[in-house]
Image (cartoon, rainbow, N blue to C red; front, side):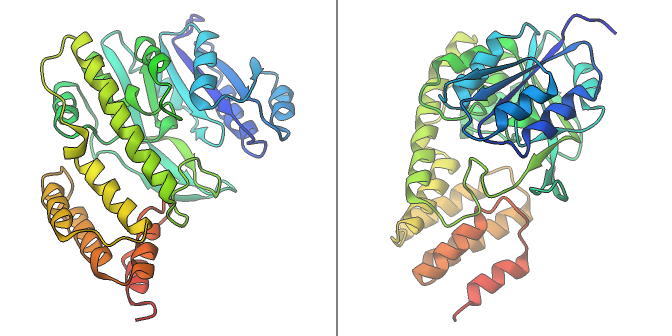
Length: 338
């Protein structure tokens, strides 16, 4: 095994004293000398820094400037050609680094893998699958981004990026997370490898940055829409530099934008206009979703647009829940108070 680092793992932490030790040990206990680990404490106000120091790993403490700044600082402290930004509340599974490193190569821009969801205590509560089979490619994903602005990708901790892709983060002052533009720019810069096996654990708890699973927050949804628009404008500048031909769709014409606009209407207590709902349903039918998912989403959009507002908002909160959902739970919300 070569001592030359092939992969850098940057753990960014802000007030995760209960979890950061687990994240660090999930890397160090794999015993890889070709993987460098750096932990960046982003000005935590709890005991995170003390927990980090106790592990003896290479670590830095900075002023609180947010996840992108912490990750960029960590990036600058490493030299490996590929980088993983591991959230301090997530973990890698044993043997995962070996499986990642064996797939690395100069033409690879990104590796993504499934994650097993765990609760705050570390109990498994489900698995998020990306695809039923492994694949490697770029053209299909690039065309999908041009057409829709997105493709299916795991949260931050389920991605590994080539270093030059990570450098795009330096122009992402509009974003509050690192799993934004670099995810969708990757296919224009090299191959994307999808690993259907869950190589990591994604912790679902009441402090997840997404805030999903709680009562819909108008400001949060509005910020998501605005960030998507800014990311699309950023992509529009990146794509030509990657020598890629094609025109990126306007943000307002994407399913993501129309879906989030629907969410915003419901969260704001406004009934979506019938024409907007019909356009959203038509856009839904164009998506590369399973028939089951399309049917479920169509039912959700239709019911949320006609139910009393309080029940529509409860449905939206349930839809945005990152935990387990079920048809029974969905029906209970529909008929609650009916």
